[in-house]
Amino acid sequence: MSLVAAPAHLSTAAADFEQLFQARLHWSADTDAAIEQRVADILADVQARGDAAVLEYTARFDALQAADMRALELTQAELKAAFDSIPAKQRSALEAAARRVRSYHEAQKKASGESWSYRDEEGTLLGQKVTPLDRVGIYVPGGKAAYPSSVLMNAIPAHVAGVGEIIMVVPTPRGEKNALVLAAAYVAGVSRAFTIGGAQAVAALAYGTATIPAVDKITGPGNAYVAAAKRRVFGKVGIDMIAGPSEILVLADGSTPPDWVAMDLFSQAEHDELAQSILLCPDAAYIAQVQASIDRLLPEMPRAEIIAKSLTGRGALIHTRNMEEACAISNRIAPEHLEVSSTDPHRWEPLLKHAGAIFLGAYTSESLGDYCAGPNHVLPTSGTARFSSPLGVYDFQKRSSLIEVSEAGAQKLGVVAAELAYGEGLQGHARAAEMRLK
Image (tube, rainbow, N blue to C red; front, side, top):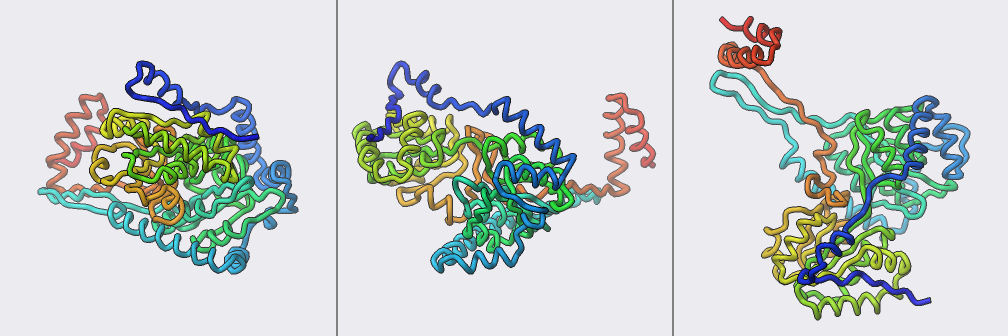
């Protein structure tokens, strides 16, 4: 049976463009009610029974039997053994990627992650103290696919931020461990690692058990059960984000080989059927060339069936009036990954306000950012790039305000504070400030 990838062909000049465009973008982040209830039950059970519940769910969902939690913890020796066991080319690639990710996040920390303070004219000190979180948990997907790159992208910025302890959880169905994931944990400096996953792993990290210490924040992607669990434990712990399906948007001026653009669209479509790949281009003939490349290249892809379903169900090739309009539509979409496939990408970059990551120029494929360019690949999805940012060092730090009021400063500030406090009917606040007045 031949597969057909039929992304919607839209034109901004068409009368029904807005209606078709909105229908193509629509994706509901609502979790199935049955999943929500099941997750609630698992969280409550792990909170009540700790390790025993985690062992039970791991046996049930991952077909991994263990007598106690010690059997599910990966030792540092095992992580190093996994690193030593993988091919030399994989070791070199892993180390090269880790170096670039670390360098980028060290630069990020220097730019925005330092404490600061100053004194005003009365000698009052005001400032901000930046401190790392004590302990974080990183969730690494397992099962259908293994993602060593997710280990690097979550653990390294936490390490650079100065987090004291990094706890990794990764499901290993039937006990099948991925050596590259374990090797990545070794390279990234993970403190402790457990072969558990799902809502039970999120619960263990949030509430703590006799074996797994409670963390301050949980980061990393997962399935619908993991997302629902992270949403429910938020407030008890911090979370990075609730991730939706992966997305790529390509702004093309028609100068890039169409095969390159078709493959870039495939790179996200192959994740799952709900992933979204969109092309915006003012050249109708070029759009037709990209569609021809899609048709020709699709049969070569090992995940052709997933790609076809993704492109047909959620993909779009949109003909725009010009590149300026393409940039405006891109801002409305606020994509996770945004490629500016143009001979002069810096001409268009100032017009682009909302995107998780912006990839400039024909040679900057999104896949380079996924693995080894340096910036983090954990990015906001489903339009949330309008108000949120990539995972970074700042996600593993917190800020405390510093205030040291001098005696002279108390005379000036006390009058202001007392006046406002009386206005709010809070006499205790007012009197506390007034007692320090001469």
